[in-house]
Each structure stands twice: as C-alpha cells, then as structure tokens.
Image 1 (cartoon, rainbow, N blue to C red):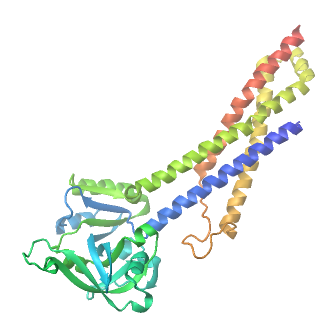
Image 2 (tube, one colour):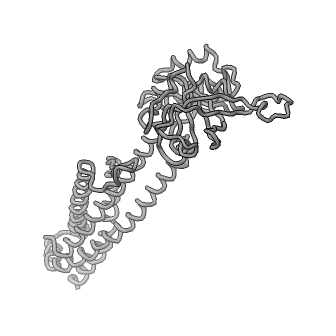
Amino acid sequence: MINIISWISVTAIALTTAALVIILSAMNGLTGTVAGLYNALEPDLKVSAKFGKGFQLEPETHAKLKAIEGLEFVSLTLSDKALLKNGEKQALVSVKGVDEQFQRITKLDSILVEGFNGVNDSSRNFLVLGRGIADQLGISNESFTRDVQLFSPKKGKSGSLNPEDDLIQLSGSVSGQFSLNDELDYQFAFVNLRTARELFESDGAVNALEIKCEASKTEEVQEKLKEVLGEGFEVKSRYQLNDVLFKSLETEKLATFIILAFILIIATFNLIGALTMLIIEKRKDIKTLYSMGADIKTIQAIFMREGLFISGIGAVLGLLIGLLVCWLQIQFHLVSFGSEFIIPYYPIDIEVSDLIKITGLIMGIAFLAALYPVRVFTKTDLVHSSN
C-alpha cells in the first residue's frame, strides 16, 4: 500500500520527468528549426578545394559525380567579396554566383520577402540581396528596377593612375531580397553564375560544388565523393559547415539534461524516506515473514520492487504529462513569439531516444536510492527481532 510520503515521491518524480520531456523536446525543436533555416541556403554536402580559392571541374569528373548512387543534384557556385553601390551608398558583401541547379538544392525562394528570384535568368544581371544589405543601400520594393553597381579588383594591374581602371565594374538590377538572420542578411548577394564569372574574371573556375542527396544516403555519398575527388578536396555536410552552432546547441542540451538530472536525483531521494516509513510500518510483517522461513534477500526484494514500483508510477505519469504538454504546443501553439518573428511559435520535436534516456535515468536513480534503506533497515529489524 502506498502511503502519503510515497505519493509525494511519485508527484516529485512525475513533475521532474515531465519537465525533462518538455525541455528536451523544445531544445530538439529549436535545433531542428535552426537546421531547417540553414537548409534554405546550405546544401546537404559542400565540396571545396583544400588549397586555393577555385578549381576547374572537368567533364569526366562531373560525370562520375552524377553517377554516385544517392546523389541527386550538383550545383556549381562561385563567390567572392565585391563592393555594391547604389548612388552614394555602398556595402562590401559576399557575391555568390549560382547556376540553375542551385534552386533544386537549396530553398532560396522560401526566404524571399520582397520581389522575385531572378538569379536563374542568365540573360540579365539580376541580384537577390539580403534584407540587411538592401537596407544599407537604401533599396526598397519600389526601387527594385533601379540599377546598382558591382565592383571587383582586376587580377592584373593596369598601371593607370585612375583607381577605377583596376576595377571590374558591372551593372545589375535588384530583383528581390531575402531574410533569414542578421548574419546572412548582411553578408550575401546572389547573382547568376555567368555574372559572377564575369565579375571575378573566372575562366570556368568555381570555388564550390553544392550537392543534394537522398536523405538516408548523405554519409555514403560524402565518403564516395572523397574517393572520387581525392585528397585535394574537402567534403562537408550541413552540420559540419556550421559545426560551432550545432555543437553549441548539443552542448546546451547536454548541460540542461545534467542540471535536470540533478533535480531528478533530489526528487527521487524522497524515495528513501518513503521506503523507510514503509519498512517501519511493516515491521511486524517483516518479522512474520522471517519467522515463516523467508530469508533476508527475499524480504529485501519485496521492498526493492515496491521502490521501483513507486518510481515507475512517477515516471509513467511524468512521461504522459510531458507528452501531453508537447502535443498541446504542437497542435495549439500555446507559447508563441508573434507573426513578426521567423519562428512564430516555440518548436517541439519529441525524440524516442530522449524518452528512453529519461526512463533509464529515473529507474537507475530509483534503484540506487532504494538500495540503502532496504538493505539497512530490513537487516536492523531482523537483528532486533532475533535478539
């Protein structure tokens, strides 16, 4: 029979377990959302040269890449720093030239907030700017048709006294602007690959291959690419490209799990008091069982099962409460940020592995917490009864 102290233990374990489920699921959702946001501009895999800024992709190598099982699309990209000017306003940005496959690999269209994606039109020098760059240049939706100037240093010096003679200058029209986060909004301007090659004096060279893979075969494709391309290239996944960000999120999740685990340990130690009181209440029954031939291990096993039963009830209730709260957030968006934010409500992602870890942690702590009172107090009672 579960006494009042046991129910307090059940409640403490249930509430801490629910908190673990909710917080870890929220952190999973945040990590997944960040990964999804970066998916808008980052490919599944990115190939770049270990040495030098650019490389030539030979037709034979291109054919070998397309033949790799699980690889769906390959995009050639060329990027470098350039100066953008709109009248008297200017900004130093990373201009990235992309080919027609780029849209199949990333989701640039999904983050456009003004205008349209004109970079696939190789007949004109269209630009898609980050919102931060557009603000710096004073470009709004009404002035999209207005030309901006792009400047990049020439590879060879002209020897002229006029500094502009050492610069390549192109005119382009802003077709749209995107918004993702401050870091990228103030960094990137997209153009078509032809424009980038002209701006940076590239004779067919690129500085990256951006690749889309089947979801389940990313790691296999990554290893195959390393074999085909050789030691002169590095192949990184989306997580490796942003390893600092994702490692920070993983570390934060681990730290949160450890902190809540300590709270769970404190909550579970209520079990010591509950089992101690239970053993005191059942002292006569313990003596009776011992007199009837039950050995110490059998009696201790009974109370150990009682302790695990109390913890199990708390764990199940906590899991159910946590899952219910997560479901309510997923369905009804109880915690929201507002429509002006990129993420309008707090994301939730429930992972089965987290539920297994939480359950294992609870039962492990419960076993250790129950071990002391069961072993000590049952022996004490039996020693007293034998005297």
